[in-house]
Length: 484
Image 1 (cartoon, rainbow, N blue to C red):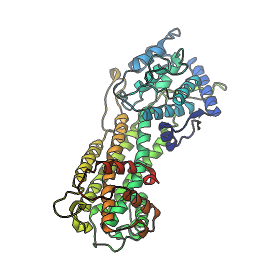
Image 2 (image 1 turned 180 degrees about the vertical axis):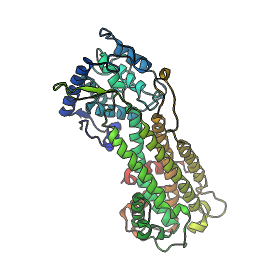
Image 3 (image 1 turned 90 degrees about the vertical axis):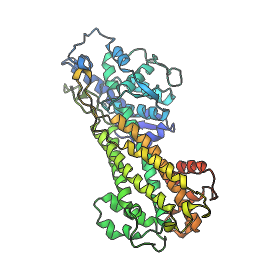
């Protein structure tokens, strides 16, 4: 059971809940915090106009609501619930609900805690709303969360065609905007992709060591002296990791290697650096009360107030995702080059394309094409999203981060990058097997696990259909420590 307290939420726990691996509960302190925030928001609304509570939204922000307009909240939810495109998977929707619950538990929305309890029941019963891909522009996922609210009310079916247990009977105006004023879906997509890419990078590091050994790379590029001179701590650390992985690799074949071996610390270190930076940002966002307006102070001592702001604009998230996409896109070039050189007898001492003979067999030739196609997708995704903008709502909202587009692309990148990593695993492990190398030759248990994973693939090197080999390799690339 995972307890949500609105203070901290591990990214790995989000991925676990999203996969259906844990039930969730709210901590008593979170409920107390939300209750106090609700009292504070109500007290403030008695003294001054509050956006979305006593006014309309967007270009209607100057329209004052009459106290008797009790249906305004329902109208807001119904009008904002439209979305389009493909239906998002259960994993993504679970992550969105969990993150929204965590944000509400932070106690800055002024929302009724009963709404958070309803989200909790929706998540634990797996009665999930149907959410589609198009609607958010990086300034709060209004359609996704408004649609969630309609599902909680029983006005929309769940993605299974049923209803949530005990649907809510009404939705007061004071709880409408505070619920939908969040980028929980965008953040959820980023968290899930981040966790997949973290696993991929760990496995790629081990796999790159396999390629390095198969091509008799020169370890001088990984030496402590070189590591100390690096321009980033992440590169220094990556050089040390790679150096430990290749212990026992034997004599180098060249005085100076191609870039795809010689610059491994920089390439992988840069990806690690951007992953870490995105992770730090996401850890803040999943517990951040960014609802507009922000409720603060206490109704008990008269300090209650709200602040109208723009923190919901996911500019930093878009920029961080863009930077990570660029780092991965750059890394793919070296992946492709290593795959190409593993097919070259000059670097492995084996037959062309790691074939059984030199009588015209194609071996792994077509795997290089598959990897290039996947790398093309990664590079297309790396086009910066943070440069986009748009003007909406009669000019009242004149900018957008499009972080939602960036995070959606990041999942696509993770899937495509896994294919590239899988191809390299097939090629590197095949080369080492054909060279007669064995896992026990190497001191690093991490290297041995990666080698063992490769050896679990079929040993037959005669020309044949390699789809099953690649599918198995891609599955392994997505498992922590190659499944060990």
